[in-house]
Amino acid sequence: MKYRYLGGSGLEVSALGLGTNAFGKRADQDTSIKIIHYALDNGINFVDTANIYAGSESERIIGQALAGRRHEVVLATKAGLPKGQGPNARGSSRAHLQQELEDSLRRLNTDYIDLYQIHTFDPKTPLDETLRTLDDMVSSGKVRYIGASNYAAWEFMKALGISERKGFAGYVSMQVSYSLADRTPEQELVPLCIDQGVGIIPYFPLAGGILSGKYGRAAEAPEGSRAETDPSFNRFINDRTLELGRSVSKLAAECGCTPSALSLAWLMNRPAVSTVIGGATRIAQMEDNLQSVHLQLDSEVIGELDRISDSFRYGKPFAFYRLS
Image (cartoon, rainbow, N blue to C red; front, top):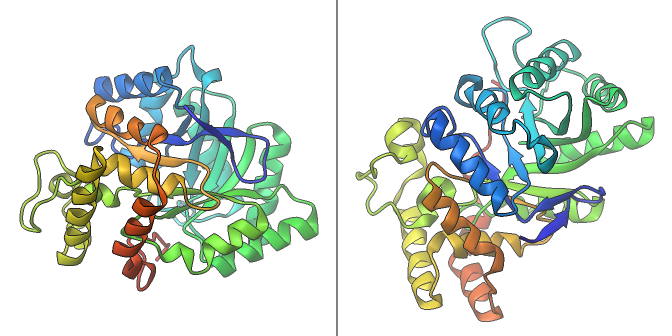
C-alpha cells in the first residue's frame, strides 16, 4: 500500500480508502465486516462513513468490525445532512453537531474520530458557530482533524479564512464528487486546495459503478447494483456517461487492467488528491480496486483519459448534496 499525507496535515492515509455507504444496505453485516477486515489486511487504513449511511447502520457495523483493531484505522465520519424530522436534526449548528458526534462515537465504539467532516454547507448557521464548535471538539480530544464535503469553492475559502483569523483548527480535507465522469472540481476547488494545502478525498470515484464497465444500457441495471437498489441513482445513467464508461473499458483492455483500476489510478495521480474512497459490496470488488494502487500509467494513457473525459470538466457536478 502507498500512503500520503492528508493535505498539509501530519496524518498519513492510504492512497486507496474504503467507502462504506453500502454497509447495512447493499451489503449485509457479515459481508461488510469481511470487507473491512480484508481492506485492513491489505494496508488500507482510511475508512469513511457518515451518520446517515444506511440509517446509521454503517457506523454500527464499522464499530463492531474494528473491535481490537481501532488503532489500525484512520476513521472518518460526517454530520450535517438531515438525520431526522426535528428542527435541530440537520445542519451545522453547535446543537446538532455535538449531538451527532456523541451518537457517532457510541455507534463506532470509539472515544475519538480521526477526521470529522461537515457533510455539506449550512447556509442558515453562521460559519463562525460551526468552526468554533469543531475547534472545541478538537480541543476536547474527541476529534483529531476536521474536513468538509460538498462546499462550493467560495464557501470553503471563507471557512479557511475564518479559522485562520480566529485561530481555530482548520479544515485539512475536502470530500467531493470527482472522477473521469465528474471533473467539475478542477474549475475552482482543485486550484484552491492546491494553494491552501488541503487534501482532496474523491467520492463516487467510479461514478457509482458506471466507470467499472458494469452498465451496458441505461435500461439495464445489473443485479445488486446501485441503480437496482436505489432507483434515484438512475438519473446519473445516460448515453453520455455510458459512452464514457465504454471508452474507459476499451482503454483498460488495451492496458491489461480492469476499468475500475484504471479509473481509480487516474484519480490517484491528480493534484491534491490524498486518498480515493472506493466502495465495495463484495471482496472481489476490493481485489479489483486494490490493483489501482500499483498501476503505473504512462503519459499516453493519462493523456487519452484526459481527452475522453474532457467534456466532464464542465456543466453540473455528477453529485452535489445540499440542504434544502
